[in-house]
Amino acid sequence: MLDSEFYDELEIRDPEEREILLFEALGRHLRATKEDSPYFKETFKDVGPGDIKSRADLAGLPITRKSDLSALQKKDPPLAGMTNIAPSNFIRLYQSPGPTYEGEADGNDWWRLGRAMYAAGIRPGDIIHNTFSYHLTPAGMMVEAGARAIGCTVVPAGTGQTEQQVQAIGQLRPNAYTGTPSFLKILLDAAQAADVDAGCINKAVVSGEALPDALRREFKAAGILALQAYASADLGLIAYESKAMRGLIVDDRVIAEIVRPGSGEPVPDGDIGEVIVTTLNREYPLIRFATGDLSSVMPGQSPCGRTGMRLTGWQGRADQTAKVKGMFVTPSQIAEVLKRHPEIAKARLVIDQKDAKDEMTLLCEATGEAGGGDLLVAAVTKTLRGLTGLKGAVRLVPPGSLPNDGLVIEDKRSRD
Image (spheres, rainbow, N blue to C red):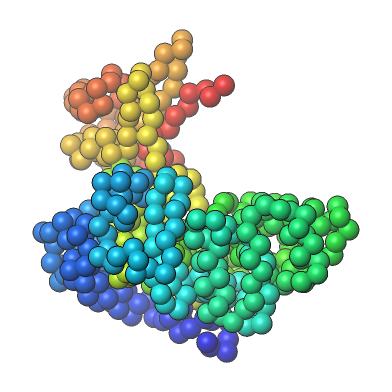
């Protein structure tokens, strides 16, 4: 452990050096993964380990979607052939909502949460009140592993039992909290109502839901620095917040991409798209794994001195599938419209109702020469109907006029 604000030297590497080393490691990882994983051996049967040397090369690989994991695992239980490790050789097996199943292999901080906790100021000797679940899902043990790597004591509080947890805080005096931000507020409010001093907690690593600015300010007023960690049961740590609170810094052992929902094509830095993650984890490899979350890349480096890529944080969900007149319309169908009509730079399908009937309009940003073309409108209208089986209007809009919010399908129908 470095005697500094940084967990290790990886956090302050030259960005170009990091990129080179990551893709060298990815080449070796691809070779091993094709040997170990029946699923990826088939998925990447036409890809050689030496073919992937850059992000542009990586963008050509197929995507594995988190939303497909449950079906893949039912077809080839328990882990869809993504590893050749027998279930009995994992130290723990988990079930997450879906359901999907994950294995935990032996190793020091296998989920890599220690880096996020250290960035939040957690240090050896701290006592952590951990309210992530220990029941079937791995969140509780992910924190345990990170705490063990740093040298902390953990109160395995889990979820629920608010009164008992408040009592434990009052007597055990933990100085750090891990869990969702909403449950931290519940505990603080309950402690105040019970006249229990919870002022021992001065730092928190929160995850599992958004942290609104107003709630962060409320924690600050209570003397708690609350920072976010972006992690999942499948991938472990993806990105984390530092004390600079200027975006989420991508973990040094993953490669993150931002792509247009439905297409898998990278978007420019600053544009909102779906988060795609590749881990360098041989026991449970996930390559171009679509998280279903929306975010964007922040330019430059964090003021804290860490040099990794930064994400803006959670911006919504990428799965924008909508049901129109009893038929599903997906972002991938809209992506196919753009593929067949390269004159369209960007498009958004707007779904609304008129006289209680569903209507959809495809708004298209057309390139200069194509703008206003009746022939293009007619051709795109035909393509849209052919792909979706639904009749929809097509309207050309000026370049740059569609919002940069990651939405490919905007459903404006009332939910009342």
